[in-house]
Length: 114
Length: 119
Image (cartoon, rainbow over all chains, first blue to last red; front, top):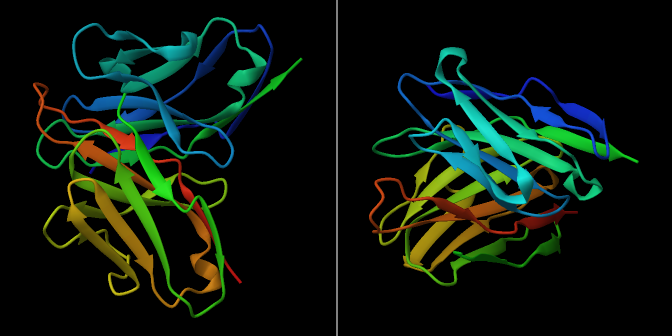
């Protein structure tokens, strides 16, 4: 079975500070990994994805994530947070073959303070 | 990029009535569409997978007679919540997966969601 864990339910950072959101996964092979952002009452927007190759993935809005197989992690980072980054962030995993079912983590709510 | 729309964006209905939610892929053909449910402050839970021209595949614990899914064309899937009750109130999100392409993985594109409130 595949699963995704986001250990931090809620994170508060100051505007301009760096950000790291944690994501750990469980899957028997190399998964496809995603980070999505959701603003209140909205759908999901894809920030970035990892399929294979370079383990450091660049996404939109200045976000990046690093796939670490040894730690089963795919943490999301941003060097300088903007107030508009306040939202809910979801890490997700898809199996790499066949049905390609997507499993989401429980989400991390990011609050940005002035 | 690929765009998925949902209609309506928000609906309020009385208990016992049925509500239909549409999910459309606007600029690509989607052989597979997914329906998710999101409770407040929780993650998305996959309800069912809808394949064009065939019956939907429901996840464990999801009542197929209550949540009717139809995927009649490559650009449209509908979710009908039958005999809705207050506990069905939730945020319903669909996604559509493109067919074809060079990649072995076909990305899912998400709709903006539908807020259902059952009184």
